[in-house]
Length: 287
View 1: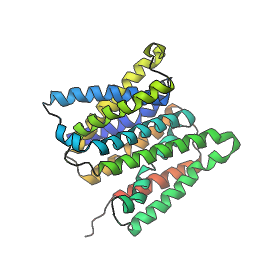
View 2: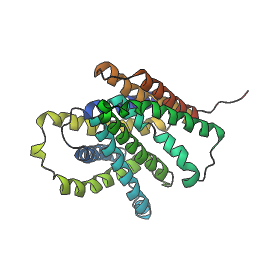
View 3: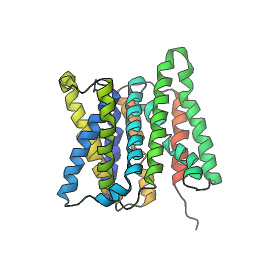
View 4: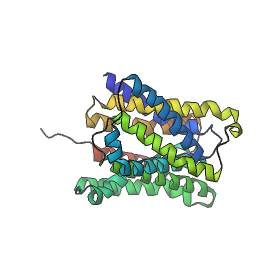
């Protein structure tokens, strides 16, 4: 029960990321850099408090694949945060939740896993749902929404790459792996941020500072901590079911708190997309 509550809380925390990012008035790359740094420091503190040690030999042996996973994580965050700037939280989240579809489509090529008829059907339904979601974006007045959804899909593609890459990373404690990936992500983003805009902390708007700390400590640090703590004693099916609390929270925040418009066609598309990815992960036992 404790594990389920921890995992549920992590999903609620992840679902509020878009709301927090809305109050941060700096570029998406700088947000990703700062959240990686702050989240890494927090999780490192938790890791050391648990008297754990880093597997330096494993890190050295897996250096190349860890580097590519960090690139995927960096791209995931940059495009997701950029998506929030262009469209509603609901649209950005639904675009981002196309990631499981990308994983299903790439699994036969990357993981050599055959596609079942069920998964092929789920992919088709998800694609129809995405067409419904982006339908409004083709109107002249809604081009910005379309760009935002496309940024969400780019974030989803990077997240799908991260999920597939992580399949090849073996023998790591999950908390340890997250700390390594966050630290590498920060190192990868540092030269890019320095080259494009520099890191002048004095230029960060004062009103944004509390939300940057909130994003780094709560949404990244505490969120990942609860996520991995909860996963340890949960079954895969329970994890799959509770994972959909994240988009549900984001959509509620978008429509109820921020009063962002969501058309009936987009609602139908959201149900088709989330319902199909949910169905692809749930396995029913026959009596």
